[in-house]
Image (tube, rainbow, N blue to C red; front, side, top):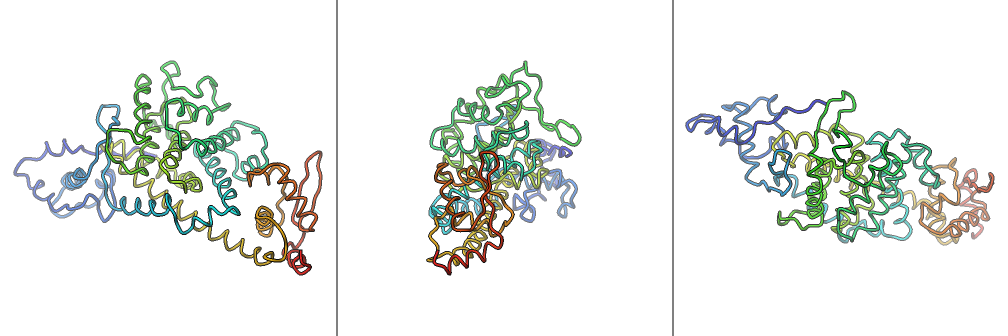
Length: 449
């Protein structure tokens, strides 16, 4: 995508206006930092019809003046030494409030998610989806179904693309386990090492900063090859990432910054600093999740943002570019990410509702009639919807996070009840739903289980 036109700075506009200039008086009619609720960039403003009596520059000055009133400056500096900042504009407070109500405390959907029947299944599924799509965003060409089969069946990766996805999956699980520990430089290195293991042209570049010897590292447009971002010099990375860790831990000098905004800013700054030879995007998104979980937003174990980013990669890239081309204004990226998070939250609600309805169909057939545990019920619920799906002991074990023997007992028990068929290829057992599974469930229920 084309790089947006750089916005005139606030200082440049002020210096261009004389004390008696009509533009200075006319800009007083701009009373909001947004235009019709949109936080527009100069690249958009310059193509629109300005309000009566204003030039584009006067309109932009009015917007910048209103934005500066609520701007919060951060300790992070751009390459030219100017600070990053953001403004609290609508709908940021509303979206943060909604996330506080739904993602950190006791919420209406919590019993559905935390119930022993569903928690592990949702958790593993979301980890897989995030691992797959975050890698696909960075160029992994493996299809989603092939990748899911690999993770579900604990199959070793067969190429670099599958290795990227496998690494992401392992990394996301580790982040969930280590959420309570503070973010340190060593932990950032470890996350990067896990993400890039066996995927780099130079294996020695995993888990360390890029250096001048690695050559220039740029962000390119994949379609045109145009350089969109030149990160800071390698010599500055140690100090920059130390500052990033302090900020992620809530120990920066900025005063209070809402935890969700901290996580979003960490995401941006890691990508901006681009401290590694490769894997920066995946590492940035991983640190976003770590920061959210570290600050108590437990529901983000189940939310996946990368599928939404993958659907609109242009908007994702534009949010970065808008910030860089308008005096390091992070508001663009914050608004974009809050929109993505809100959609991910809505997708989770819809997923839970759909799964609850589907589970209810099977529960009605099984309740009080057949003695099955929640893992067996989950498999049957899936099997009713996917009558040609093939299961095995390892995939059942991975999906529910149980021991191999427990998974084996589950599947052999369903076979003994006549609900799934069993075959053996080599040393591996495979299981398929019986033909007309719903009828088999009804007959089994009528017979008393």
